[in-house]
Length: 153
Image (tube, rainbow, N blue to C red; front, top):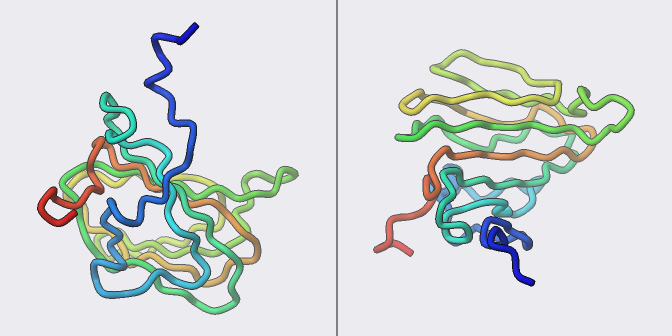
């Protein structure tokens, strides 16, 4: 028997490099070597009712400071999530991340998240160091917030 709710599930990760705007790549920068490709966890292409576009990337160890994303703003709200992978200390990110909001530098060393309201200038974003892999999620509070305009796909 097929469930009436099966259409709400995303059961396969999708490489979303081709349909999302990556601010680093849009600025002409290649993806840093210590980052995985972005994987779509939820998007309106997969679940039409979705009001969020969620991507996940793995951030791999590096001892070098690594710049990722230039300052920018969106016309939608966004949540950035940083999650360490130490089950004995889930608060420990295992990295030192920097993120500027309206020019004010913030250092992130614990698992957590940051809410970015629409229109708020944020970034640069980068890593001072990464001691062990962690997960980064970007949640655009719009089902298609990261999509390129139809004519550019």
